[in-house]
Length: 231
Image (cartoon, rainbow, N blue to C red; front, side):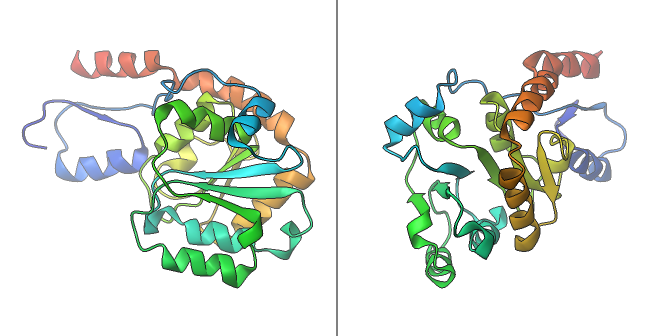
């Protein structure tokens, strides 16, 4: 912090922490811009075909490195909820394990959801990211702790509604009830949000809202923030 002259923060929680280190140097709070380097969106049909996934299901996506703080255990417990057993919904868990995989694999067995969860726990090249997001109907980020998440901005880029938890700055980027849901990091609340999304058939409405909401995450906004803070 001592060697830096100016600061850009992308969540209020980080800005608050920064003030604890330095209350004098210029600082600017702005939004995390879109990750738009993964190419253009493709149709759901094409994405499912590329991944060899069935067209009869709708897919929930957990994407990214698997670490304890990311709350995959909460999502697996949520998806084991009895309400999902008869629904044509499947869960995609896409990302490398950066922690012991055994507890998560045990949750699959304990919840009786091994046949309804598709695990791809290997590195995903940038060129294949589009397939997983475009095949999915909902992106879920069940984090237990966070500052910000680039996954949110990938989801916005591909026009995907989200369920996220109210930790760190995640709630600052998700308009609750408009582009998705912001809930407590508890499996029952995550389950309720996912269930409401699918049973109330909100995908079309929320997707349209995402397309409008993501305009505020342009790279131009970041550039203006940098320009403002150094003036």
